[in-house]
Image (cartoon, rainbow over the protein chains, first blue to last red):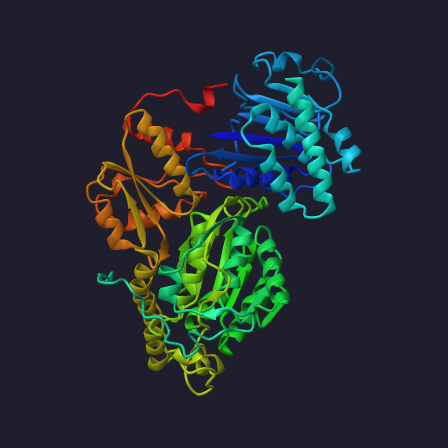
Length: 187
Length: 413
């Protein structure tokens, strides 16, 4: 079972990201589950959402405690909460940042992760270019598809379309595709 | 108690004249037996709240009354969308949960199929009306999306409020998954409205774990629906000021201290309980039994309801890796309580664990109260206030009781 935990701040589309990721897997005929964190979240507060993907039926109904992949939509969260909690040594880490890992001050924390499992994507910049709004969620799903291969980029596009039909969806699809392509060529 | 139901497992569905006709939304009124057992479904990916909406779309509901409280607000709002699309006759917002349940009673007295939703403190605020519904024999359905009810305030999942519903005279069913929730809502109407039952029903699910989690659910097509409620099948006269139950509200026996008053109360309350007993045969047929049993021949069993069942399923997998085989009894109806079924299923068990999402451990007490040799029952683990119950915690409880050494979760760093 692949378990993904998505960290971000209220308003960044964290819950929608988990939802779109799970829909992508559902569209591929896999078993999936999207779980938001349970609370009365507000704009700017740390928010977390979870997604499980498996070939078998998923029995668990609880937040993800040991994620195989972490998506961090806001790098300032590293100073605020223990983002890496429960991440195993072979986990994936995807960060929305235009800076180097060293600049974020998490070099030590990520040293244990295998090569190619840590990926920095300037998702907000890509979103500003295509969507004209600082919403990194769909962009990061494109990058997740590229580094883990767990879902196809076509499924991600389909899921974005079902969540956001029309122009907004199209812009997000273009942004996700751009992130997918630039991440694929990097690794 | 617990009549054996066998044969072709069909329910005495309403032979409503409208079966086969179309409603204003072009849905065909379909016989419940055909609706539940012969209709091909399609897998969809929805949250529990969306599932409530999809169930009500097919339920031929007359009136729904809404009042916002987390985590059911979304479901109540989605039913408002159905009203806007023309699926319901009446939909409005009540002044409080107490008012909502009174308004539901009015609509049900008037002959409508009535559905509402509530949660946590809302359930407690509404509670005076629930025994009134049962005594008035109103087959209203309330979907309870359980959350904490305590102070300090919590909006997190917690099943304590279900304990308050147990002696209201309402049927209380507990869904484990979004699929259960969908099935129980629709089947709940049919059982509640049987002439020999005619009682209100609370279909409960664990808030957030079910309502806010996106999950795979198999749904029937939207061009069929249940036959509408038939008020002429009611076992009590509708709104007759001279006959019970309305007579008893107009001229309450509470005013009198005489033999007639005591006898009326006793017989009326017995009749409500009798109706609850008679609901078993319908629920058994529709739900395929009041419990589900997996590997019931094991010496160690988990017996519980709701998402505690899901967590137990995963714990069973983890324990099997260590060579410990555990069986499972999933309780689907808490009222009526599956007494005989649980006694039979636990006959050979040496250890019976009852994991629960509440501080009181009321399900553990319910089970202890009906079993011989009830020192076999371990009423643990419990979590409360929205805390998760990782499967590993259930595993630790089993190993502790069986005297098997393990490395505690808390020491893993």
